[in-house]
Image (cartoon, rainbow, N blue to C red; front, side, top):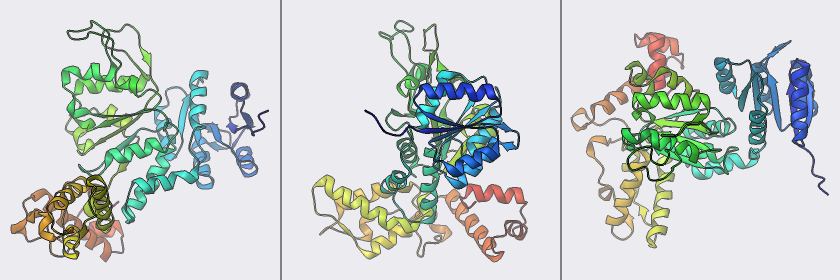
Length: 448
């Protein structure tokens, strides 16, 4: 006999018919339900009971669903909350996701969608296992990495689309995998795709599949990337490289949650979470009309920025030790050690290629070094990206003007912020910048 306690769901809605529909549907799923008609009753129940999921209407007699999401985020951030909104209220739903909601439903509530959402929310890993797993995969104790791990932990509990920004080689795909692996879709596929590597004439077939005979070379039915990721996560890397014609079709697939294969007559329903990334400034691509604004808003519900390696120099030693241990294991050789001068050289290098470049530098040095000791000269670092004290090298040694100007800008802004005790308005005035321009620069440099 199964005596395990039933999972508990909190329903918050002032409409009796909606409450009854949800109670009956969830009861048939062998779940125990508690109902509240308003914020006050919901808060009282949250105080008394432990819940596994909360379903709340957006409009309540004494408050809003957003206020309830924020209340739960403060009290029990690992409790998933799904918002019920009026049909077509996309902006409301997006605000709920940004506030920390797990997902959303639109009225009239579709029961298959409700059951799917509830099942997904109840598959969430326990809170205790999340942080440990992320720390094990994402190395570094610097403040930027501590903040990044916290954000991943939070985003893993949501179904919101996430736009992962950051420089090439900074680890955007690893971040996407961690968001997937720590969430309720972990047992389902994670499908990464480099949007810039697919020939434009094959894109529709690759994304949505094709039917046999639909074009020359289509010798059999083939599912697309959306179908392959059904139930899991589709990671669109370098999404800015998608041509405009494909952006339209991608937007429709995301909106309708259905795709039609090339040569097919019927649409197939797909359930995927979309994560995307690019090293380009996607907002600038929208301004230049190379990326659709409506697709940008669909993908960029929440932005997660991955810091560059030069923003977390304190992590370089730990990362280097990890890479050298892995190289020793892979090559079945004794582990090489870094000479103090070599470590200092790494810390003073700008790493335009980020963690990926660090791995390549150490792999080369691991092969070239004598007596299992990596000397500074074994690293063969580009002089244009080196400095004597972690600051910038002399201008005559810089071979990347963009990097040089960015570093000068960062140094001046940090100096102004420190002199004004991090008063952004005062710092902007000191630099003769508008507050809007200052805010843009802080975001661009990862200082916000």
